[in-house]
Every structure is written in C-alpha cells, then in structure tokens.
Amino acid sequence: MQAHIKEAIEAYGDDVSIKIATPADRNLFTITDESEELDEGRSAIFHSVVAKLLHLSKRVRPDIEPKVAFLCTRVSKSTEEDWKKLGRVLRYLNDTLDMKRVIGGKDMSSIHTWVDAAYVVHENMRSQTEGCLSFGRGMVHTKSSKQKLNTKSSTEAEVVGLSDYVPYTLWMNNFLAAQGYKIKSSKVYQDNQSAIRMETNGRNSCTGNVGMLT
Image (cartoon, rainbow, N blue to C red; front, side, top):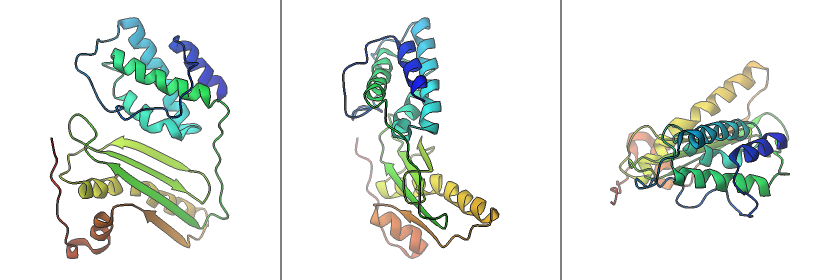
C-alpha cells in the first residue's frame, strides 16, 4: 500500500515533507464559514485524494480513519481549511510510510470490543462514535462515524455509540460460530461508568444528564 500513499501525495501536489506526530489536531471537526471554497480543479483533486485515503484507512491504516471519515463529509463543499487538514494527514502518512498493520491473537474464541464517543464535537452539536474489534493483537475492524442524532449528555452519547458499533461485534460472533468456532468470551470495553451501568441494569439505573454547554 506504500504505492497508494505515494500516489495520493503526488496527486495532492503540495509539499508534505514536514514531519508531524499526529494526522490531525484538536480542530479537526471545526468548520470555519469564512474559509474560501476550493476552485473546481482543486476540489476534484481533494475528492480524489480523500477517496484514496478512505481505501487505505479501511485496508491498512485504521489510524487515519477518524480524520478521513470527517474529510469524506467535506468532498462536496471543500475549502482551503479542508485542504490544509488533508495536507496534515498526508504529511503524517509520508512520515510513517513504513508503518505496517499487525493483526493476530492466540485463538479465535475471544473477541474484544472497545467503544468510545467524543461528545458534541461537530458543528451541529452531534457526537462522534469510535469503535474497534480485536482478537488480542491489532484491530480486525475499526469504525469512526458521526452520530445520527443529538444527545443531551456524554453518557447518552456513549450509549448511542455502543448501539452504533456493537452490531459489528454481534456479526463477528455469528460469523465465527457459522465457521465452527466456539466463542468463549466476547467483552465490550467502555470508559464511562454511567453508561456501563445503564447498559448493564437498564431502567434500574439512576443517572443524571449533563446538559450541553454552548
């Protein structure tokens, strides 16, 4: 896939030799209305390069998936700000060209799933779901996506995130069982205790909502 990365960098055209440690900064989801729209030619290049990166993120570079997922929402209205964000991803890829995706595990009987939500990070006050699935070493499946509804608290966003991602875990359980594997353990990990209690106890849970601050 190194050839695909180099092809994307070449298509982008700008210098990407400056080294950076991460593919995005804290302003990834920020949209500046005053940022000038790209002309037709650069907009087409933006669309093409983002599509190449989407293929890469799904195959060998899940580390760039949250950034690419956002850039995919900008292909129809890309701006100079988006162009710079794309350039940062490409600089990161250029600096980590030799990074390989490693997948493994002791056996196929234990599935581990991690789900998290970034609360109200989008301009329309929606949250972002991040999820990944592993057999013990590396990630077999990852997904990063904007949630489709607004939530009133970080706890609620975490519950929605679980609902968004756990179907992939259930599919993996059913798929492996159909291949003859016996699933001994399938665990889901989250870092929000209120969400965990709600998901475990249902209506018996008592938790308060934290309103959105604007």
